Length: 300
Image 1 (spheres, rainbow, N blue to C red):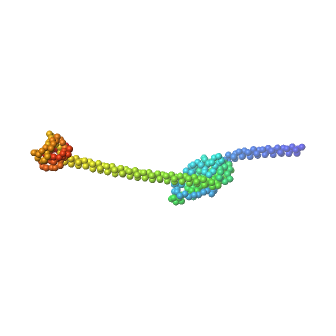
Image 2: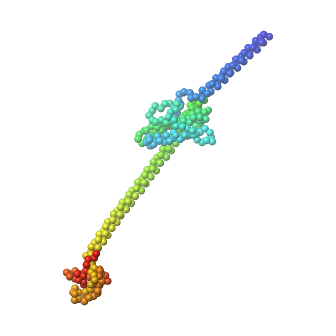
């Protein structure tokens, strides 16, 4: 009877001890779970990455890379089947998910947090962060090299996963497309400048033609004006008008010659023949005769 009670008592103590240990274990787990969500330092994952050289200067390639870095998309991966792209990425100045870059080149980062088991990262699961790194290095004045790496870090399991290459290829394609768009825009701008220059040359040529025409017209008007002045001068030299009260048109330069017609005062006549005392004249009607010089006066 004592042995029976001793065994029952020992069994009860063992159960109480197990219960206390299970409670302590549960408490420890509840305390450790939030800690697991915090980034834990580990050796960054080395990735194969992808490298490509572009036939473009550093300034153009840098602009294309920055445009891709800031497009808010991680290309070449997704989380849910109904969402073909993974948005929500942000440009960053650094990332602890990569080995520090010590070689020459400019380094840019793009980070997407809270990604759930993203596609095209090897053996992924749970929730974590995707980081993409771009390294831009000039080869010469007209060629630039770009290297792209991508990695996924699982927050709960504290494990890094390399991309299978799809993300890097897709990001590189975006860089190429951005660069092609820039080059196309530059070509179109250059073509527009050439067309504008051509139009300006045509405009200037047209202006010069107008100026030449204006000059020729001015010269022609000046010549007309000179001719009119000459005509006026000649008219004053070759024409006279009859003084008041009028005069008789004679058939010969003599006072005794027959009168052909009586001409009214201020009638204009054209001088055909000049003698000291008589002018051979023609009337406005075309009749010819002689008039004494004393009966004629210059035109006003």
